[in-house]
Length: 102
Image (cartoon, rainbow, N blue to C red; front, side, top):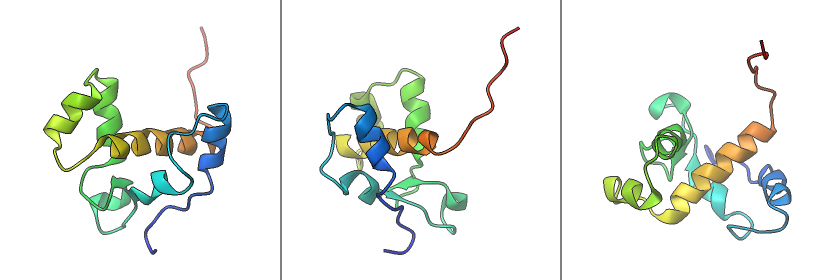
């Protein structure tokens, strides 16, 4: 489907999880969409205006999955887990500049 992220990159995440799979093959990335005309092309949850980065930011701020789902009642737990899996796979694909120790 156009605008849908390909599933191929999740293999590295599943390998890193040592065989523990959160989803059957194909499920996680079916929940993540990228559309250049929505949210400036940022990855979103199921073609909504909720970005993967918004979900991750909430979790990083200490919001629980249950609290996040209460704030976004149109999402479900699998959407949140898909955002985490997508982010983990995205980080496997590129080098990020990190601060050098002093």
